[in-house]
Length: 370
Image (cartoon, rainbow, N blue to C red; front, side, top):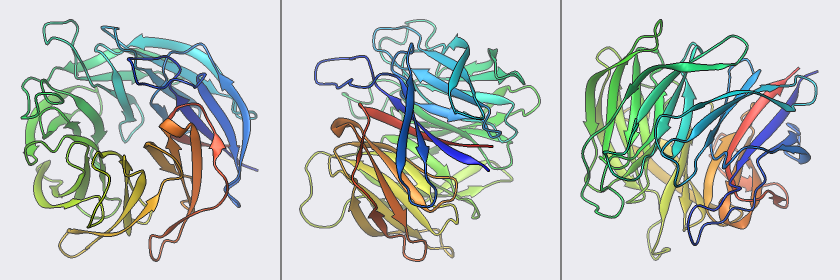
């Protein structure tokens, strides 16, 4: 009988004044897919600020970033998942080739791990790589990079867009292109991706409105479109995707906040489609809510349906459980995890129980173990 383990990356090292860091490492919970209840299993320590996690498609390996201010390079650590207990066993680590690794994803074939470095400091600071592609061995060992690129330029916001700040990379559904959301440049950068060698080559870009600050994006599971959560201006951008040419065209931009008075300071965080593609969710940090959108299948436009309190302050990340029946949110500044049921017909979220303590949660990831 299979079991579902939920892993939580937690900040455990202070970055700068005002930050919180009350986690210990990578926490593991047994997740009941019938009720949504959590049972703590333990925490893997010995890793600094594991703020983002990625689990291989076969649920055998977990990879975690170490995002530490002051390091010219972060690290990415590989672990093996014990199929019985879900415990993590260290395999190896590689430098991320840039400062503040912010996000990881696998290519569609699962052979390569793509990493993003948010990057701070002078552009002359080495190695200053924006996007890095690592090969993965069959035993989970993270091998040396096979490709890397550095973005150049800046956006209109002098405080947040003084230089490139890549924040998310994903390969297209057909694995022919790698797409990067750069918060500092207001761009989606598109690279041709070689699924055999892992190499990437510049292809084109999609331009978003100035000052948007694209953070994370997601491809629709069925339709030829992608949606982008814009951190700086709290909007959702919908783009039509031409798979043959690997190009995007902007379709619509809509606020992630309800009409009327709202929290003055807000920034978007994670974005994810429901597994059936009927609804899309975006995290609002400041408003501390989850925005639910409906996507018009005919024209690709988005419509805001509702916002639901996230169960705590600063919903930095969320993820659907493997059944798609639950959505789990890590509320960073209230040190808690909230679990919601998902009504797929309407998109409505309903919190199912009291929140579960987790020190400074920054990422949620699920594995199904047999």
